[in-house]
Structures are given as structure tokens and as C-alpha cells.
Length: 117
Image (tube, rainbow, N blue to C red; front, side, top):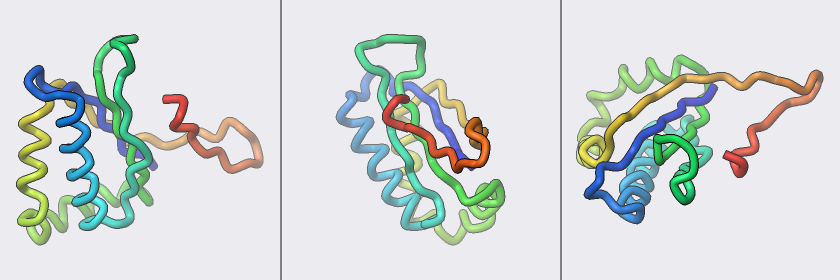
């Protein structure tokens, strides 16, 4: 199961700032919910293609991980609130999706090639 975030940085946020904000967000997120693994953080290259400018892909053990976020937020919010606020104040046009991988290769375990994204 994959949790996908797509978004733009606000115009006053540089690429370096966005990378630093997301790095700190991911570090905190993975400490609090270690079963959630950041697969990759991607930026649109040279303005090619339509928006959004950023894409993050997280691997989750299952859809129940989202329930775990809600159930444990009160317990973990003190460690996450500042960086969550910083992220949400730095971005716009945020979309999130919960997706599952489609096995196109019969009988083999398919693994996403995130380098191509």
C-alpha cells in the first residue's frame, strides 16, 4: 500500500528549503510511525510537465496504518506539531492518495522503480 502526496511549494519557499522541511517531516514521521517508510521524495525537473512540483511516496504496511495515525495523534502531536505546521505553511495545492500496486508481471513480485518517477 502506498500513500502519495503531491504538492507545490509556496512561491517564497526555495527548493532547498522545501527539501529541508520534508526531510525533517519524514524523519519525525518515521520515528513516530516506523512501519511507514519514505520510498522517495521527487521534484519536477526543469519545469517539464504539469504541476505539481513535488511528489512523495510512502510505503505503508496496509490501509489500517491511516487509522493508526488518527488513533495515536494525541500521543505524538507534541513531537510532530511544529514540523507539520511548517510543512502545511510552506505548501499549496496538496493532494493525497492511497494507492496499491498492480502486479503486471504474473507470478512475480513487482517492485516500483521510483528512479523513473
